[in-house]
Each structure stands twice: as C-alpha cells, then as structure tokens.
Image (cartoon, rainbow, N blue to C red; front, side, top):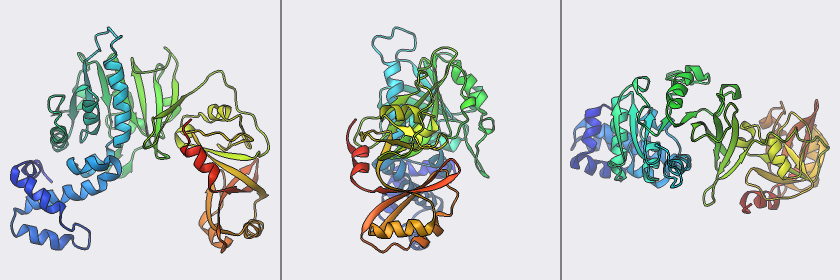
Length: 420
C-alpha cells in the first residue's frame, strides 16, 4: 500500500468503499472472490488498500478494542503499536506530570515530542488525556496513517505529525520526549538494545535532553541497560507482560544516581495496581511448601519484585531460584494468582497419574517453572478421565523435580478478582 492509495481511502469515495468492505466477507476463503467483485466497480489499488485496512482492523481489535474500527494501520505499525490499555495508562502519567497545577516549572502544559510515533497510538492516547504533542516517523506512509488516526478521533488540534528521522530532532522547547525505537527487522524481533533503530543509547540521549522523558523498550531489556536516574516499569495487561518503559527526568520516580524498578498490572474494570522495589528488603526466606502457592505476575518477575510480593503475603520461596511463593496466608493480590496446595509429590508420571486418579481428575491444567520435562508428553501420559478440575504445578526444589496438585477454583478467583 502506497501513500496515494492510502490517501484515497480518506476521500468520501474511499470511506464509502471502506464501509462496503467492512460489511463483506474478508476471510482467507472468501478474500479472492470479494476482491474480484469489488474491483469490478472500484480502482484495484483502492480496493487493495481497503481490504488491507479492514483486515488489519480485525487484527487490531486485540490491541485497541472498539477503537480499532475507526483507526488506520500498516502491518508493521500494528505490530509495534502500543496496546490501547497500556497507552492510556502511560498517557495518564504524562498528563499528571504536565498538568499538575502545583507544578510551576516550564514543562507544565508543554508539548510531548514523540520520536518514532508509528501509527500514532500513543499520540492519540495522550491527546485524549489532554496532552499536546508532535509526532515524527521515518516512514512517510506511517506518518500519514498517524495523522489520519488523530483526525479519526478529532485530535488534529492536539497533535501534529511529520515525516523525519528521530536522530535529527531536537528536544529543545518540548516539555517531554516519548520515544519508541524500532525493535523489529526483516528477520524478526531485536533483543539487543543497541540494535534498536535508533540504538537505545541514542534514544536515551534524545529523551534525556528534555525535562522529562519516556522510552518504550522490550520487556526483556537487561536490568544493567537501565541508566542511573531512570525508572524501569514493566507492564502486564490481562496477565501477560506487554512491554516495558524507561522513565527519565521529571517523570522518573528514581532518586538521582539510582534506578527504580516498578511492576504495573492492568486489568479491565479495575484501577492499575503498581509496586516498586523496596531497597530495605533482603532476599525472601526459603521454607518447605506451605498451604498456598502464589504464581507472581510476569511483570513482577521481570521487575525482580518477587521478594516484595512475598513480603505482602507473609510468604517465602520453596527454592530461592524459582519464582513461586508459598504461604499459609490467603490474601487477595493483583500481583499473583493463588492456588491451594493439596499434595506435593516427588515427580514421576506414574506417581502423579495415580494421585490424580485418586482425586477424580479430568481436566488438568499444567504449569511449570524450572522444570525441564516435555509437558505435552506428560499430559498425554497422565490420561485423566475423571470429572474434577485440578492444576498441576511442575517445578523443583534444589535439584529434585516435584509436582504440586492444586485447587483450580475458589482461591485463584479470590486472588484475581477481589480488590486489594
């Protein structure tokens, strides 16, 4: 899809065609027939662009919900775009910083320079939160898509977008910088921060030159890549780690010369839950398995905050290298799922199968951490045919593999759904 074809979609005729395609069958099985029918009445390039947009919108619902049906995408732009819930969470933080009535600094009410703005998901979220911004993207088509997304939500007055190279931009005059460096190439995801486009050190230099900044990074970023004075935040949504961000300057909660680690958990219908590292805490205690097992959220694990969560649960670790918390206390927490432990067995398939049959096991959910076995083969070998649901946790204590049979229902629900 080129810019001319995309801009054709923004015309009245293009909008009518988008509506027509949206009502058509665009599944793989029907795509060729649908395209042939539409090309009999519309320019082929415009039909191709409309089909691309509608199919991308269907994929984008997982990230943007109902907003996806109003937005525009490129395949690469959708892949890298921030999930809507995460963008809204981050936008609230920008808005609170830039709009704090008690803040008399020059940043108050200023603009956010968005470097590598992509299809504009973060620009839209900040615009809706009341922040003004300027987006820059290297690809002219992607910049055009971002402008169209601002227009789709009536935010043309809140932000603008231009095509350009992020490394040529100056943060001077902006209240804050947000940067989203490319983390994919034609060969797939990039894991080395210095292989980002632009490299992380370059982006940190740009964002750090503004009074406040934020750099979006991959969740697997090494902790030693977090610069002094920065706050690293790992964010999960619906139980899955989605991304991480480095907060700088006035947006960072870290003290000068130190770093701060934060885990934030987002769940639909509830306020974000957040936890920061407590330097006063030592390593969590190590004990035998107690009555309950807590499985920490992935953001907690990425942020190395398992000890902090264990402390809130009066918990300990059964093995100091494995991120499972055990406790005699059942407490609702957004930072972990809780299971009641009914049995702890030295692992063998034969022994586990017998124990599950003795508990009338039918549906068995298998979880593992620190366990090297083939889960699918174990699942087949268990051959459970009963009526009850159980959770089997395969892990180890020291070098010994163990299996825990846990309750799959009430205690997990309490931990996930009861407000803290």
